[in-house]
Amino acid sequence: MSRSTSAAASEPPSLPPPTYSLSRARALRPAAVPVATGGRHPLSPAELRRVFGAFPTGVTAIAALVDGEPAGLAANSFTSVSLQPPLLSVCIAHTSTTWPLLADRARLGVTVLGAGQERACAQLASRSGDRFAGLDWYATDDGAVLLDGAAAWFDTSVEQQVRAGDHDIVVLRVHALGADRAVAPLVFHGSRFRRLEEAEAIPPQDLPAPPLARPARRTGTEETP
Image (tube, rainbow, N blue to C red):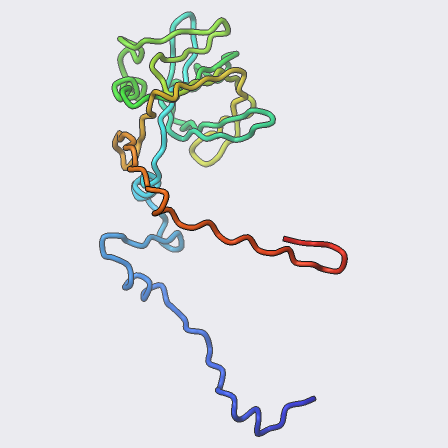
């Protein structure tokens, strides 16, 4: 049945949705948090680094034997990739002078540094000197180099290398691994080393109630959650 003219006239007029300009969005944001766009004004590497640094990460040491001596670098762009097959990845800058020494190694050790290994990280990130001086490390039979006192370790090999901007995404296959849950990880955030802090236990009575289960919805002869 069609609506009458009088019924339609009694309905409130529909209003267009509100619009928000970028300038208004800037005005609503705190002055200490500038808004950057990638349009006519390219994003600066310094600004990207600052904002990327807001995401906390662990720190890893990527190392192997080269001519019988340990060679390695520090990388915080570590992430798990796959369970089947077991893969992880790190990102390496094209400016790295150490990665060309490691790229063709049969095995690479990936050490997840512990909270007390700030000095090890600083050495591995340095551009001069013996990066492994004074560090406790060991090598596997296949030449992967790992550091003692770590939160976790992986024995890996290069599976794939993908060029992405000014870095390479290096996918590594995991052959062996281990973790020491008694060792807290080293955390890198805001261009500084940080450590995890144990959160206070929340009494059970203060925990939020679990959501109520929804009854099954019957559609024809099938039930859907």
